[in-house]
Length: 406
Ligand code: ATP
Image 1 (tube, rainbow, N blue to C red):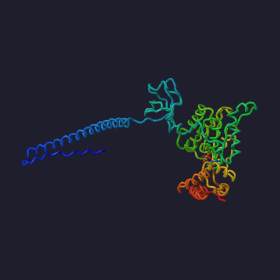
Image 2: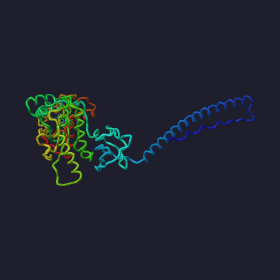
Image 3: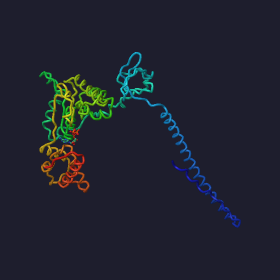
Image 4: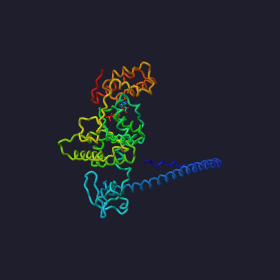
């Protein structure tokens, strides 16, 4: 808080009895000017003090308001399950307790099954929450026009072909499948090590077909949205229907579809419910419709086989670590826009990066650029790539993933 300004010094009049009348008059005139100046200064300070007072008064008002809000009791979040003539069935988030309750008159009319609502201590529904505050907005990433193209993906020509056949064709030419009398695969599962381009493939196919890309991460569903997994899976498919044509991408599907373990903790039961909902959605899915489903995992070995049955994720596409040709292609893509010195030898870099993933090759190119910038150069030389190699290798060592070098 600012301090009070110091007051100007009070002007003093010193009249010497020995002064001549002229001298006295001059002294009085000069004193008068001093008094006028101090008066002006005091008036200005008074104005500032008034303004400060007004500001403090309005601060007090807003603190009073905040205090009132803090004193009033918090509301809990629940989902309405059924609207009956004599009440509403809700399910509380967190403990999944189902309760038959009443809704406040102000919301009764607008209430629908599936709404997210705020309830008070006695379970009375007080407010309908705006869909914007819904957890699904946080759990799902919606991209109306993803910007990745097949040309941005290196070393995965075969996989691109398979994705075209299984995802792109059913979206662009569904009548072809009808004429032949077969159902396109319901879901496609991309599996392979981290950072090899699985997400890129899914984005690129959405781009190619002008579809909306909707991504949900299995791990987030399980860690952040406890008690809401099954509902979010339902929402995911609903969102996809709202945005048709759309490509649903479930990353880290192993988090919800891992083989069942012996342990029977409540967490397991929750994951189980989420997976059952996913299977139910897939079973009721229009195979020739305008929604395509792609899932990805780094842990194929851990997947529950139920997810791979016909009519579910029945097309498996392996996305492996890039081989020599793949590494060269990926390096070419990521250095395309860079100002490279003539001594940069991409085939040699492909030799030296055995075991690198696409993501690591991308970061190698960026790091080499950073070394040039640090040196105040705009051209990137082979030496920069060598330093970058050291850096990416040491980072990888600290992450604990061994990389083999030629
Ligand atoms: P994760 O399993 O960890 O989710 P992922 O396989 O989905 O990884 P992506 O997210 O597609 O990997 O790739 C991460 C980044 O690595 C991309 O944004 C891109 O810069 C680079 N990359 C990975 N693979 C390739 C590739 N085949 N071609 C070009 N760039 C690639």
